[in-house]
Picture 1 (spheres, rainbow, N blue to C red):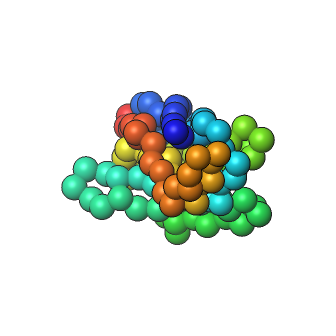
Picture 2 (picture 1 turned 90 degrees about the horizontal axis):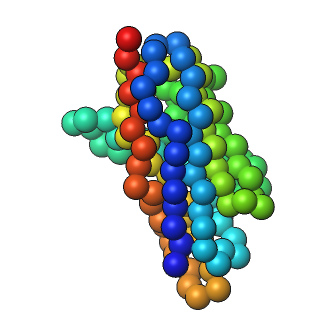
Length: 121
């Protein structure tokens, strides 16, 4: 069984920074992609950033130049460095991992439980 544990959310003032972490644990052989999505109240969940095992990254236009996604393959961990935060970045941020192969089975998609980021003065 694979578990995702997110951390790093919290309250920050506009212009501030936060770093989110997501660790995937279990008998994992490989993960194709790791990413962050967010869902604000009353809105649909949306992609924030994604990184593939070959290093390719994708960002939502709204976070380009402010957020940076990175990955430690050896630790099955993905990070999201968020700088110059704005009130509109307020949301629950979810970690998602794609095409996870373990010693027992293959998982197409797995989600974390979410971590709240609040940007407010």
